[in-house]
Length: 246
Image 1 (cartoon, rainbow, N blue to C red):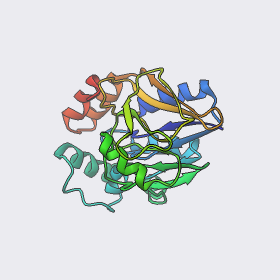
Image 2 (cartoon, rainbow, N blue to C red; image 1 turned 90 degrees about the vertical axis):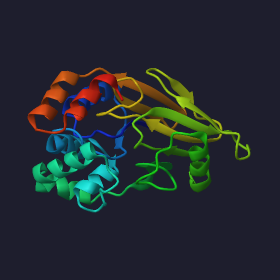
Image 3 (cartoon, rainbow, N blue to C red; image 1 turned 30 degrees about the horizontal axis):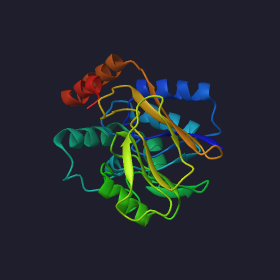
Image 4 (tube, rainbow, N blue to C red; image 1 turned 135 degrees about the vertical axis):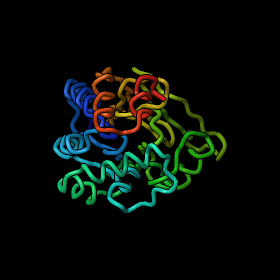
């Protein structure tokens, strides 16, 4: 089976539409989303409707839970808090109902899916080898998908290797990873707010038969997304950061 994997849409409609166009060209069997459909951006209802319509599987992320009032936002940045509060006021009942029925982790097609990490599906950023090692220890499936960090990357623990022998790297556009050996954690990067220095929207193509993961980046109308954020009265840094991918 071939699956397109998205994560961290964050209410960025131009980015999501561009990614879905790329996904349509690739024609995968299924579309999976790792959560954070809303937050930061200005189009929560339109993005949620598209994800609901197009995805066979979707997780709930920490920003989704915050908008639902199911998560304490005291640890959020001021801009993130402002976006949560705005989204609570703007999101439709249908959006909230859909997000409220999702979970932060699941196993699908023998692949482990987490919004954040295997040992903490809601909060933990997996950005280091040490964090990946802890994830491998907590994960029962050989291949796991993670989001939350907004960085396209992968980690591998070779088969039979002891703790401390894992490796990982960021994955640029067009990178293809052979998943045949060992345990893996794969992050597709963010659709709506990349933070790896590449402002283009990110997604991942996972082939469970060929055992490969292919990383993709898609250009989108950043100015339109930024203009929507400004028109909504959301904090200016949320618009500015889209240009730099930080």
